[in-house]
Amino acid sequence: MLNVRFIKVLYIDLETEKIRIEQRDDLMPYLGGVGIASKLLQENLDPNFEATSPKQPIVFAIGSGAYIFPVLSKTVAMFVSPLTGELGESYAGGRMAMSLLMAGYDALVLTGKAKKQSYLSISTNNIAVKDARAMWGLPVGETGRAIRDNEFNGGLSGGKRSIIRIGQAGENGVAFACVCVDTYRHFGRMGLGACMGNKNLKAISIYGNRSIPVLNPKQYFKVYKDIYKKCTSTDMMAKYHDIGTPVNVIPLNKAGALPTLNMQKTSFEHAENISGEAFAEKNLVRKMACTGCPVGCIHIGMYRREFDKGHEYEAISVAYDFELIFALGTFLGIKTTDEILAIIEEVEEYGLDAMSAGVCLGWATEALEHGYITTEDTLTELKFGEPEGYIKAIEYLSTGVNKFYKTLGKGSRYAARKYGGENFAMQVGGNEMAGYHTGYGSLVGAAVGARHSHLCNGGYGIDQTMKEFDEDILVDKLFEEECERCMTNSLVMCLFARKIYDRQTILEALNSIGWNLTNDDLTAIGKRIYQTKLQIKNTLGFQQKSIKLPKRFFETPSMQGQLDEETAYRMIRKYTEKTEALLRENL
Image 1 (cartoon, helix red, strand yellow):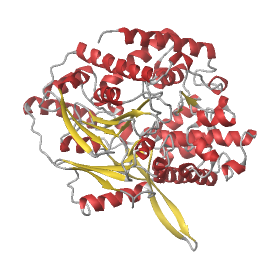
Image 2 (tube, helix red, strand yellow; image 1 turned 90 degrees about the vertical axis):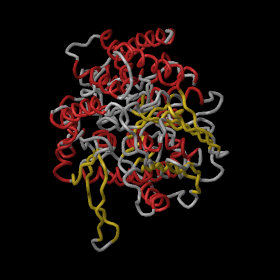
Image 3 (cartoon, helix red, strand yellow; image 1 turned 60 degrees about the vertical axis):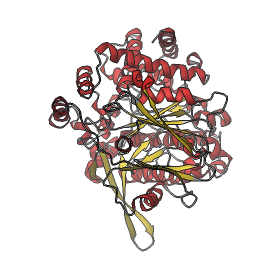
Image 4 (cartoon, helix red, strand yellow; image 1 turned 135 degrees about the vertical axis):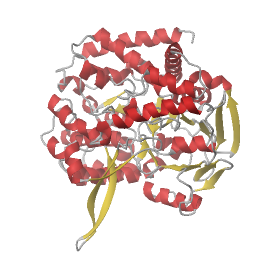
């Protein structure tokens, strides 16, 4: 979309291997990223098929400023979620946005199922569906190495390539399987890995080497330098480079907002031992950045793993952040940084979403305690604070070794409906909870969010900044922020940079590369995209007013104290009135 007035979309039918390219000027009002991805998903999905059907499409899209400005580094994936049965939306950094841009595409639409286990090879001048039968069953890391050898002859790609791939969890249809992007980044939530597995698609390799001129270099470089300076010379993003998001562990723990032991508690007595500061002192060995980002927020930790008797060790490097420390740490009662990294490594190699995996195992641990399930189901002891059982369970879950793990692989909501314990299956709308029990903002925000994520509207952040609770003001703020993030996610902006990319900065950036937008245009774009998402959800049968929240959200005190169930449901109804009004607007 740079220097042209159309969106270039690459369509690939994996079943027939037919390829077509369209130049879509009608998509320009959706800006880019999540906007064009939402519209393309709406055009290609079929509500008559199950979410798990390979006939359902997968859409990838880059933003209107992807790689052109600092921290506009992500790619969005849109799909029908096998976890929730409705809108699937996930974001990943790494090199994918840059590679798609350099290959010449703004969006990629995948339909059909490959006739055999395959991977896609996409480059500037060539597109091919290739045999991946030898890679099927390989862990995520080995798959990446195999494709690098196949496609890039040992790495001759000039840093302009990206490889996304799934592990055994995706191959076996685990509803919260993730997709690994360039080793340390992921399309984590909502089950994109299962969607790829259902299509017999192990991986996608993307390589681009074209040169793209900037038509107004003087204005562009002025804006670029101003944004770069904000990223590197102010404190707006300093915490993300320093300790990173794990800096949140101690403050949330002190505030009584850190979900612990399947959210039986909201503080963890061992929080100091697994804090961001503890990881930095004991395990941190490297910081990395996504391509096009000067910040370096990816924190790599190292631990030693014994692989044989006789003091035979290997050093394992794995990325960590707050959400992983919550889901695979406090939520399971794990007390040391090394043990958390060991669990993360297992999750990474099998290709699971770490947050859903941890929350599902938290439910399973408590379900085992209450007798809803037995060790004949789990095949191992699951006990809070003991990592060995969880490491084994991750393998069993990813490979679906028995009926119980196949059921758990459909998410905690589904498993609890089968076995019992719905009141402590900590999910919202089928999506396992995030690491915040801050108040009505986090809970209602996830319930009404388009993809039931804490990142839909940042309700947890609103909780922490509101001086006095007012449900009407909070509902308004959630709705306004949801619309705003629909717009900013069309750039596609890393949300860590949301303070840097205010409205004025966004306008200056986009207009310097050929857009002619106003503040009112940005508002209309956000509403248009949100309306499209709501239409998709309605098409897939989602009813906001029918959502049911687990009782534990109201039993375990939040940062704001005990939450009232009727207040939460009343807020959901008020929010639904706003979305119903938005659906009636002519945008």
